[in-house]
Structures are given as structure tokens and as C-alpha cells.
Image 1 (cartoon, rainbow, N blue to C red):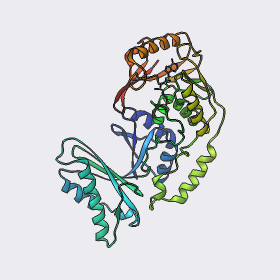
Image 2 (tube, helix red, strand yellow):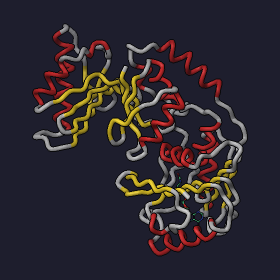
Image 3 (tube, rainbow, N blue to C red):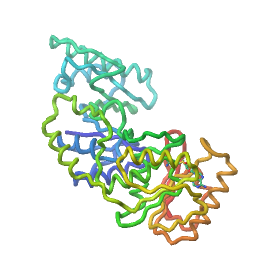
Length: 362
Ligand SMILES: C[S@@+](CC[C@H](N)C(=O)[O-])C[C@H]1O[C@@H](n2cnc3c(N)ncnc32)[C@H](O)[C@@H]1O
């Protein structure tokens, strides 16, 4: 089967690397925020349950060129949806569109939805749409004239919603991005990893989960359990196998934050994530940065903190960094110009939501 997987726009190569680690075969870049792979049924489970960089895993049903909504309807009618959905299930279509078209994304959704309803009706059965709480999501994207239609094996909530956050930081980092930062640091489990501005602890938790092989078991819903054409028995066996691999070894991961409130929040999140990580209240501009890997996400100065204060923070943090002999520092920032250029090995620019962001690797 052909699988499409969505990930962070601009960080697709890290998702490709992770997919290769998980299944021994490479995926390829499809377009911004999406990779593609030829997979087996078990890859649907593996990628949803083990991947830390992906947002959704989709099974491609069809891709084609269209010029009008009529083309969309006609081509979707050619897909045998009864192979993928039961008529007792409720479905919703979610579609995106980029380019100039004489119709909206909602028009696209309702055209695909109508094609599905009509296909079932022609076979003598009835299938219902439920836009709020469907059993199955059909996803589609139109880019220029190219459209793909896929069935979502992940569900309503993206995989970045890990399910372990009990404390919500005002500027939390997406766990999928946190995982990418840890990968970019080339951290090995016998090395010390420090996040000196850890907020609610996401980077530390993602690092600890990764090397302890903790699957995405804090989420309570995955759409693949409801897809009748997938072998759920096989998936239950795989779940048992991967659950038994998870460990809770103590690892040299530490975090600190200047705010006592966030430190308390990070500790709560660490407990709900089943992790064991030391977090303390300290100032990143003064604390010892004696660690092999420094991975952090300082304030952007947009959501929290004023511009001048944030600039001073970056300068003082950079001068503290310069006093230590770490191997690699990976810094996600919306203010790359506030960090010194000396020692910069790589800069990856991408958009975090609407915010232009950079990963600086020293
Ligand atoms: C963008 S947030 C980090 C969010 C975090 N990655 C998460 O997922 O929750 C930046 C954090 O830096 C902390 N911070 C600001 N100035 C600091 C300083 N001088 N020392 C340590 N932490 C600081 C803030 O309290 C805030 O929690």
C-alpha cells in the first residue's frame, strides 16, 4: 500500500530518517510537510504507534489531475470506498487546497463526500456523514491540478498530541519538533542532555521517551482500530511486542527553568509521561551548562517577554554557553539574529505555525 505521512514543514528529512530507522526502508519527500512510502499493513501500526516525528499516517486511495469539481466527483466515484468503510460507519471529509481554483476547500470536501454517499447508495446501502465525531476521516489535498484522496489511520487528533501533558505552558513546544531537536543534537543515551529553559519539559520528555523506546501509548484513540480492512489481531500482537520493549531506565537528561511555576508544571508532565527526569529552578544565564548536549527553546519574545529583555537574555545565555565545553548545542528560536554567529554549524529555517523559526546548531 502507498502511505502518505504528514510531518513538520521544513523538517521532512528528519521524518525520512526516523521512518528508515523504524522500518529499514526509506520514505521520500512528497511535498512540504509530507513524505511518501510504499508500506505494508504493519507499517500503519508501527508509524502511528512508534513514530515521534509524524503527525498523521494516511493510506493513499487515489491521486489524479483535475480541472473542475466535476472531475473530482467523477474520479472519486471510481474509488471503491466499500473496501475501506462499512456502511454502518460515519465519515467526514477534510480537504485542503493550494493554488487558484474557482471553488473552496469546503466545496472540495462536499464533492468528495457526495461521491462517497452516492457510491454506497448505488450499491443499495446508505452511509452517513458526521462532521463532528466521525468514525473515519477521508483526507484530500488539491495542489494546482494534482489531487490525492486518502484514508486517515491516525484520527481526529494529530500524533503530536501525545496525551501526557497535564500542565499547559503558555508557549509549549510541539513534541514532534522537540524530538527533531533531540535527533539533531546527535544525543547518545550515555551522554548528558540539558535543556536550560525547559518550560513544561517537552524536550527532556521526548529525549527520555526516545531512548527508552516508549511508544505513543498515552493517546487513547487511533483511527486504525476502526478501519475494518486492517487486521486488528495483528495490530494487537504488534502492540504487545512494542509495549514490552519500553523501558524506564534512568538516563542523564536534565532540565531547568527560571520560573518555579513552569518547573512545577514540568514535573507534573514528567510524572504523567511516566518519565524520570531531574528538573530544577535555575537561571540559564548563570546555571552550569556542563553537559554533552544542550537542546533548548528560549522565549521568542512574542508570546512571552519583551523584546529588549529577550535580547539581553540571549546575549547572557550565549556568554554562559561560551564558558562550557559541550559537544553540540541545538537552539530553536524565532530570534536567530540575537545569537552569535561564531561556531554556528548549521541553520535550518522553517515555519512553526505562522512564526518564522530557526534551528541553530553549534
Ligand atoms: C518557549 S518557552 C520553552 C517551552 C518549552 N520548550 C515547553 O515545551 O514547554 C521558554 C522558557 O524559557 C524560560 N526562561 C526565560 N528566561 C529564562 C532564564 N533566564 N533562565 C531559564 N529559563 C528561562 C521561560 O520561563 C519559558 O518557560
